[in-house]
Image: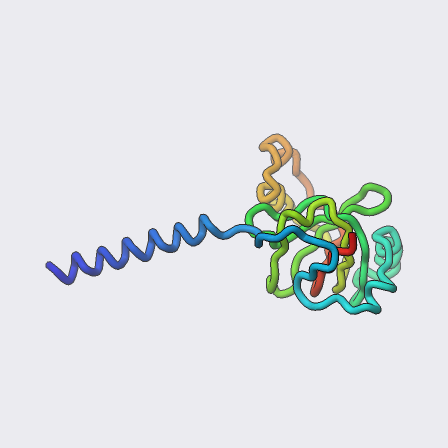
Length: 167
């Protein structure tokens, strides 16, 4: 009987610890200051040769995928749960979606409104309704906005290996 009580106590403690750890997880802390880097170091060459998001769109019209490219833009949203994705605004007010390569790093929500240089790969993809709804929930969109998502959508997806705050 004592063994059963001990096992139940250990099991309960493990569950409570896991729940508390999950509650505390979120985007990393930080002010996203000019010069801060998330993920791999962004090369000096990438900073100098970074193209605008508008030029990225043009490149992706010719080829559905572009590797080893640097893009500059303004961050408009960051995943509030973990900092595991962000959106970048283009010159024509469109936005593209950025995920972190291999889920290896996260960014703080303080990155919203900052200009960044992203280094990585870009492609045009068709995004399913379920995936769009998942990210809308992460972004804390209203239920009406989530329910309005009813068809797959083609969009630019960027897989960032490194992100640097430039201003």
